[in-house]
Image 1 (cartoon, one colour):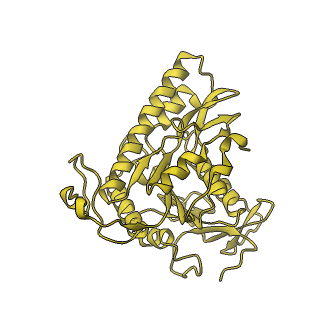
Image 2 (cartoon, rainbow, N blue to C red; image 1 turned 90 degrees about the horizontal axis):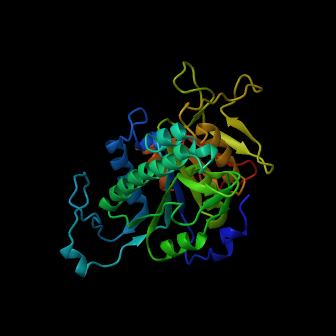
Image 3 (cartoon, rainbow, N blue to C red; image 1 turned 135 degrees about the vertical axis):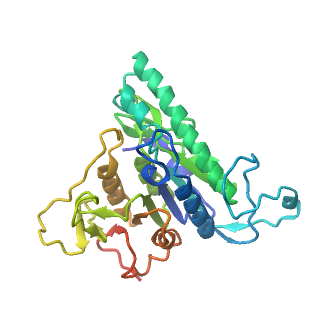
Length: 335
């Protein structure tokens, strides 16, 4: 559990957070190629976020670096002088590491602690270099779309853990960033741990903490598959779980579709190099968010299905042709 250092009292927003978005590492990077971004997916995801975040006004690109990158938004610096302010919804973006950071962290054992060891200390630095590199490219991709994104590495913003549980997370920094009209972009990061020296703070855990304090209308997990399956989706006859109900005690069960073997546990696999728990963490964190009364949509990135989830179109009704997994409180009434 988080301590009082979380500054929960500092969370006072003039307008509610509409959505917290998790960009899954496997969706925005090529997970089997070291430090390689999935440029096509990232561009589509950034474009979709622009469509749902910015509701009115002319959109102007904000990446002035002249680095290569495709976008239909024109970066007209001179035209900004006469530009009227753009009306936008309040979002928070959190991304995973994918092929960035995981190799460095697992090779050095950063997630296990032991900063006094030279290998761990070097791995801590290498991990942060890697995830910060990805963070910059994601911020750049969003900025190209006219989204006023700001990099907010948890380590640099004062997030830390104790026994791998969040001990400090200054919410006032996130709040001030949002109130100033920016979109915070956080990510899984190597952080200091009071008990074991250091660890990896996953993006999924960050989202759960943000959801508890910022109370968004809904949360969207963008992944590289259509949602949660009853077994690894690469296996034959894998079934997409369309709805998972979460009880007030945090326990969850599959409500759609009706599985033939109700006692069968959902089979989850975790990649050997994934130091943050993979899909196991994702489902448990999604369930904890849903327990707060906040709907969670787990959906494939860069699809029409993800656009509907990001735009909040699923809050009242889930169309039969929508592909994804909804995780929600079992007694929540849908209007």
